[in-house]
Length: 292
Image (cartoon, rainbow, N blue to C red):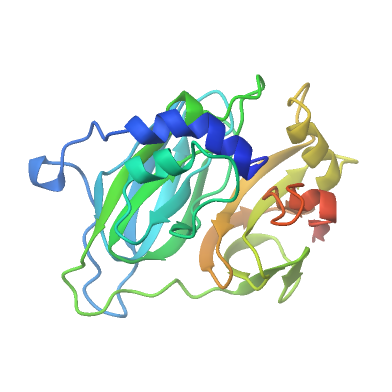
């Protein structure tokens, strides 16, 4: 689903939410569920459960560093995603809120590190990212049909990544398919087939990109879903999003797992272009595929 329509627009609608957002969950010392750190380089990634509702995240306020699989359960009535944002150079969520009051590109200390991309109500998604210690935020940039970003309705909250106790953390899961994101396309190492896949997503382009996996309705294309999403989400969606990986920095990597059946699928990127602010789908960053 759309991470954001325009970065300046996100700045305006999310500023108040992010500037004053404080976690209402207790720390791990007070009982907040948090993933156990990986015990060795061969260990499985940490696991974090996030429940999205209209319009809030139920998620840990602290997690340990290392490879982490985020499991998103959408229990709301609208599409939801989890964009993970790292705040570098000692910046806090309050700093992010202050910076977002000014239109323009995001600050350089604001890093896009992936997360589970959008899914429909009642559906689940997952994505794995490697997180370094620091301050982060969970954010949903998907807009409601009224055009208001979910971040502005409460779906933005801080969390902390603490140092892992293990000397080495688990890496990203082994993948059977790699999809590279470029300006402006998707390059898959091999065709998708029915069954369960672990897909590695690599941003090989010079700017931020995301990947949304779509199960297309009969006779529809990824471009139809893009038009539907960008024009008010009126009527039945021409595709169902199956997750993917939210926005990644240049060189960023993440994985997600998905079960596929035979049929027509699509890939799409909604991230606004660094040069003209148009969503990357307007530059041709869509792909239609048949899984058979």
